[in-house]
Image (cartoon, rainbow, N blue to C red; front, top):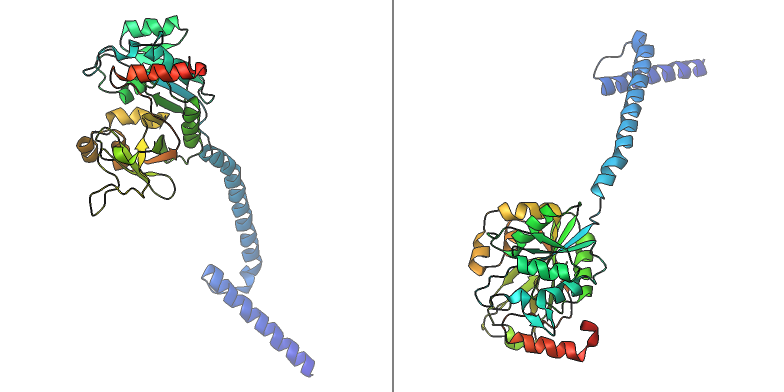
Length: 321
C-alpha cells in the first residue's frame, strides 16, 4: 500500500515539475492535452535553430577569409621633380657618371618585396633618363604639391592592382634595398587598421636640435606617437640627454593603397601645418603608423656639396656602382 502511495506522489510531483518547466519556457499554463503538441513544437524550433546555425556556419568561413585577406602586391614609386628652389635639376645631377635619379632607381630595383617600380615625374628630361636606363616612368601633373600626392596619382595611372604603395625618395642614391623590404614587410604583417609603415634610425646627439632632422617617438608596440622637427621627446631642462636614444625619421613611406586614395583629399590638420610634416595628418585622423628601427647612414643629396661625399662612398664600394 505504501509503495502505491509513493508511486502516486512521485507521479504528481513529476506532472507538477513539468508544468513549472512549461510555464518557464513558454510563459503559459500547462495543458495536458497540449503536451504532445508542445513537444512537437520544441522539435520544430530545434530544427529551425539547427538550420539557421548551419547557414551561419557556411557563411563564417567567407567572412573570416575576407577579414584575413593579406596585403601582398606592392608598387614602388620614386617621385621626381626637376624644379627645386634649393637645388634646381637635382634628379639629373651626375653622380659618378650616372644621373642621381637613375642611381636611386637601380638601388630600389634590388628590393625583393617590390612587384613593380616606377619613377613618377612631370619632366620629360627625367623620363628620358630613366627610359634610357631601362626603367619605367609614369607622367604626372605638374601642379601636384608634394611627393605623396604624386605617388597617389602614379598609382592611379599604373596598370595593375596593388595593395601597398611605397614612396621612395629620389634623392637617396644609396638607399639600401633591405630597408625597403623591411618597411614593406612591416605593413604586410600589420593589422588592417595600420595604414602606413616607415623606418627610423639612431640620431646623433649633436643633431637632435636640428630642425632639418625629423624625430619620432613610438609606443611599446612600435606605433608612432608623434613626429617633430624639434627635440623629441623634450625634457624639463630643455637640453639633449646624452644617455637617451633619439630616433631620426627616414624619408621612406609605405602606404596601404586604399588609404593612399583618401590621403590627398583629407584636409590638412593643425599639427601637420604647425610642424610641416605630412605624416602627422595620418596620426591626427586616428590611423596607425608602424615604425621599424634600422641602422642607416643617411646619404641623401640635399645640397650640391653632398655629391662629392656620395661619389667617395661609391668609389670605396664598387657594388654600389
